[in-house]
Length: 211
Image 1: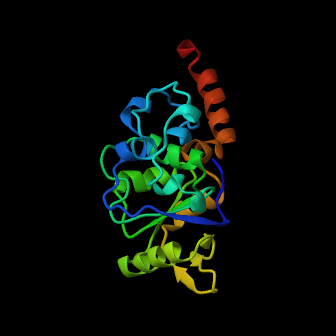
Image 2: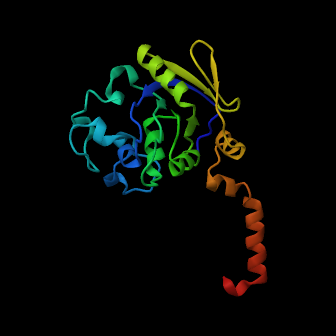
Image 3: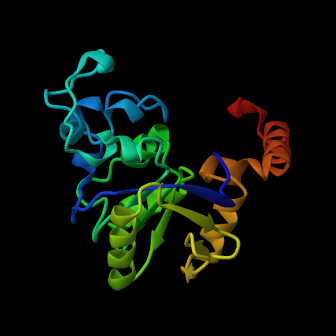
């Protein structure tokens, strides 16, 4: 998993509350368990004017010019600004996969759905909770200032605005440790690889009939 320490990037404002995981990555694209390849179909029903299906040539599909991620000023955005209850709906891990594969490193919102929130940490995507008034202020700043960028400093737990103002956010210490060190569940387990190998060798010696 890609570690997260500091990141500075362009902000894209998704001004919709209660964005569910089927909107983030529609169900017809959930046929793979790889973590990559979902970015082209992120927000598929909003980004395109036709119905998307696996295997389609994305370059030939008509795009919705009114959708924020299709607008030139937000091309290359890596920080998503969202509204409350982001990531609600079904518990598909493909949702953070699609966001990360598209190029997002962090999502800022006033609240997240619990399962989506947990899945973000397991996939190198940082969900940042700020109060509603602050999120509203960021929406206004993003829309008023083309090229609006934020710096996210995870070790310091702060978001830095272009004028130097800092916004502090809270994060569980264990999740912070995992994200800053690029450790998902498998990575955490592999930290004990030597102990696991010793256990397996001892078990093989003590109970050879099992092998």
